[in-house]
Amino acid sequence: MARSLELALWLILAAFTVVIPNAFKFVSAAALVMLALYYSLSRKDYKLDKNFILMWIASSVVTVIYLFVGYANGAPEEAYLQIPLIYIVTPILWAIVLHGALLRYGIINLVNFLIGCTILAMASQAFYFWAYAALGPESVEFMAGNPQVDLSHSSAAAVMYVFGSMIFLYSGILSAPKVINNKTICYIIILMIFISTFTSGRSALILSLFIGILVSYVLSSSIRKGVFSSPIINIVLVGASLLVSSSLLAKLYGIDIFISIESLLDKITTMGGAGRGDYAPLLIHGALDNHLIGSGHGIGVQYVVNDRFPWRYEIVGLATLYRVGLVGSLIYALPFIVAMVKSVRLWRANMLIPQEKYICGALFASFVAANTNPYIEAYAFQWMYVLPCLYFISLYRPIVPTQASARIKLAVRDSVTPPYLR
Image (cartoon, rainbow, N blue to C red; front, side):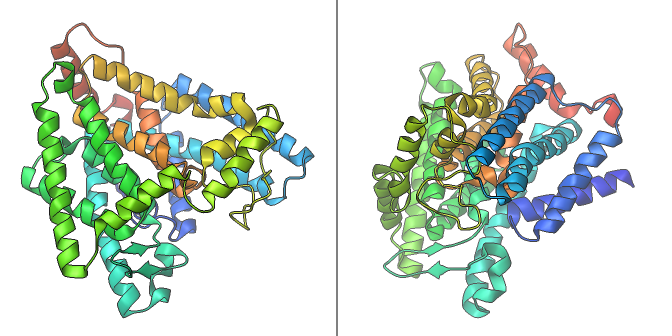
C-alpha cells in the first residue's frame, strides 16, 4: 500500500512539474509535501548528506539576512513570504524527495523515467499546437498561462511552460545518447528533439542542444585517450538529425531553422536581446554601487520585468549579485560548484557512467538557462537543479583503487536498495 502511494505521488509530481509544469500548482505542491513527509517520517534512519545540509543552511542564512536588508530598503510585502518559500522551503523539500527516489530506485531507473517523461513532453507540445489551432487558446491556458503560437516569417514559436523542462531533458540525452539502449529508438528521439526544439522558437532551448553536444564531446573518455572516433560518431549523428529535421520542417511547414539559430546568435551578442540588454547594465551598476555587498532580497532596479514580483529578472546571475552581493552569490553557487568539481573528478578517473553524464550535461544547460529565464526561482523547475547537485554531492563515493572495482561499486550502488528502505 505504501509503495503504491509513493509511486502514485511520484507520477502526479512528475506530470505537473516535468511534463506539464506549472499546471495545477496546488496538486503538484501537495504531492511534493506529501512525498517529503513520507520519506522523512516513515524511515527512522533516513537522512540527507551532511555536506548538502550544511550548504542548504548556509544559503538559508544568506536568504534570511538579505531579506532583512531588503526590508530595511523597502522591499514589498509579497517578498517576505515568496522569497523564503522559494529559497529555503521548496529546495529542501525537493532534496528530500529526490534523495528518497535515488535511494529507492537508483540513478539508472530515474534517468529511464526522465526519458519516458521526455517522450510525454514532446507529445504535450504536439497536443498544444493542435489544440491551439483547433480548440482555441483558452483550451491550453493550463499549459502556458498566456498561450501564443506564431508560424509566420518562415519560423515557428510558441509559449509553453514545458520548454523549461525540455532544457534539462534534451541536453541530458544529447550529453549521453547511450542512456537509450536501443539505437533505433535513440535516433528517432534525437530527431524528434531537434524538430521539437526548432518549432518552439525558444533560444534557451536551442542553446541547450549545443551545450548537450559540447558536453558529450568533452566527457567522452575517448578524448582523454587521444581517440576521437566516439565523439565524431555522436557529432555525425547529431548533424544528420539536424539536416533531416531541417528538411522535414522546410518541406512540410515552410520553417527555416536557421532563422532561429540567427536569433539565438543575436541574443548572445546583445546580452539576451531586447529587455535583458536594457536592464543588465542597471544590475551591474547597482551591484557595483553597493560595493558588491548586496541591496537585499525583494529589491529591484529601475526596470520592472514582472509586475507581480518586481524584484525578479531573467538574468538570475546578475540579479543575485545585485541582491545578495558577491559573497552571498558564491554561497548560493556552492552546491553547483561542488557538484561540477566532483563530476570532473569522476570523469578524470574514467568512472562516469552514461546516466551521470546525462545529469552532468543537463545541469550545465540548466545553469546556463537560469540566466535567460528565472527557472530556478520557480518551485516547479527546481528539480532540474537539485537532482544533479544532490546526486554528485551526496551519492559520490571516494575513488576506489581500480577501474574495474569502481564500475562494480557503481553498479552495486545503483541496484541495491538499502535495508531500511526495503
